[in-house]
Structures are given as structure tokens and as C-alpha cells.
Image (cartoon, rainbow, N blue to C red; front, side, top):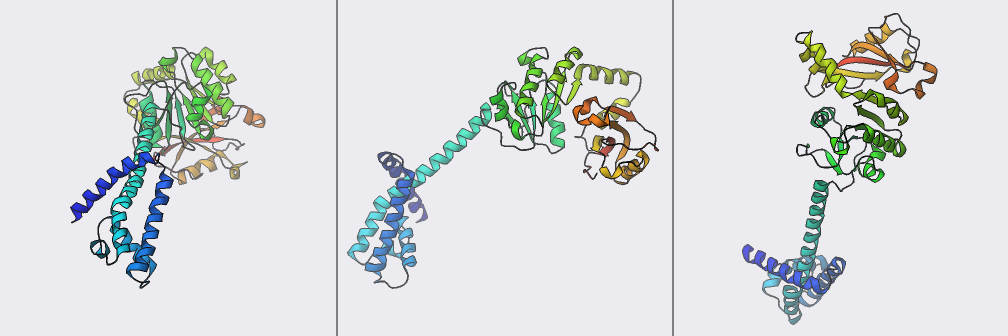
Length: 361
């Protein structure tokens, strides 16, 4: 019985697909027609079959089951009007139900396909908030994504082509990251940070990276921007673009490699403290609270230790009166500062922390 009812519903859906073409796939109209047929049929059943005995909703329940060929009323209507209602529901009711079922299913499938294709092609708009946007892609991209995900950051990537090894949780936007429309699709207006990588698809020099930084600054100046540069001579141009932090990837790798050659075993330590994805320890910087203004660095370091962090350095602006005008990347760092030195804000403290450490400052 259940199998025949299912076949009947499927056949009704097929008739509904054909019928829906005649009403130009008007989903709203089909729903209204189906409701009118059900409500009107329920009224006639309540009147003719039951002489207003029971409730209208009981009659409506019987009519709804009649639509799928189930129920006592569908099997043995007693009056002419009852038989007519069963006939109409079996033919037109099932057909209209097929219209609604087919149209809703088609819209859901089309929407899902559209979303999937959009994600694959990178034409959708990122809806993240407080995320990090990677602009450009190179061999360091997968490691960068791994580190960002380890800190529970949502990540979006803007690149010319979708990388084959891109993590499935990264929102991909296809395009040129130096263009305003592409950055907006990447969610730059609601992003927390942007990382500009040197992308060989846009040339071997730093010019494209600097153009991307200018576009980000124009659209969202509050986004914290980190740029990867190859040529130190281009730093002044990056500063014109108001980039917050600059890294020379080539020279940094060379420095670490040279250090490892005359410090046996130190590479394991460096991997640990530079990665947040290995459940070990890593560097982190925190703003020193206003409560410590005028107090000693020793007191502040003791508090950090009590919270599970191991302080090693402080970072201060070259001129505390104009700290807001100087990028943090140009502040002065002081490793193992004197414990009796007075704190003058603004100041940041650099600590070794476990990768699961939460900000308690």
C-alpha cells in the first residue's frame, strides 16, 4: 500500500512538472491553488459528508490524507460531493502538489548548484567577519593557512587561480587582489587582517604587492596589513601604502638557516616557537594594561608568569608622544629589559606561551 502511494505521488509530481510549465512555474500561484483546493474540499467534506459533525480541522486532515490516497474517506466516500472531491484531489490535487514539490525541489537544487559552482570558481562574496584575507599565493601559502587555522581564524584567499592544495575551509575568491571589487568580494570591509604574499602570477617584483596594499588602505584603513617583500629597497614604498608590518621572507629564511649551521639542534626549537599548529609553545605579544603605568617591568613580568606566560622582551615606540603615528613594526624591541625599569605606555610585552594559551591580559 505504501509503495503504491509513493508511485502515485511520483506520477503526480511528473504530471505536476508538465502542468507547471503551463502556469509558467509560478510557485506562489501553485501554492495558493493547492491551499484553495484543500480548504474548499475540507469545507465540502465537513458539510456534505459529516453534516458539520466534528471539527473543520478533522475534515481538513482527512482531505490531506486523501491527497496521497490514504484514509477512510479516500476509500469510501458516501455522497456525490464526496466522490467528486476524491476524484478532483486524485487528479488535480496530486498534479498541483506535484507543481509545488517539483518547483521547490528545483529551486533548492539550483541554489545549491549555484553556490557550489560559485565556490569552485571563486565568484561568490565572502560573508566572514573578523577574518584574515590572504592576497596572492605562493609556496608558503599552505603553511600560512595551517598556522592561521591553528589560531581559530577564518581565512579567505584572493588569487588568480584556485590552488590545487587549498584547504577546503578557506573561502576562495578568484581575481586580482589589487582591484577594489575583488577585495570587497573577499570581505575586506569586515576583515581583521590582510596578508600580502608575493604571487608569481602577478610578476616577480614587489610592485603588485604594493598596489594591493594601497587598495586595502583605501578601502579599509583599519585592517592590519602584513606584507611579504623581496627587495628591501621597496620598503619605503610599502610605508607610503601604510603597511603595518613588513617581512623579508628571503632574508629571514637565510638568517634562520645560518643560525642553524652553528647552533646544533636549534632548528627544533625554532620550529616550535614559530609555529602555533604543533601544540607546543610559540611567541605572542600583548598590550600592557594601563594598570601598570609607572610600575616596574619586573612586576609586570611576574604577573605574566603567574598567568602561564614566560615574558622575554618588551616593544616600545621610539617616541611615546607620537606612538599612533609610528607603525608597530617600527617600534623598538628590548630583550630581557631591566626589572626595575619603569613602564611608560604604550608598550607591548612579548612572551612564550602555550599554543592553547588564552589572552588574559
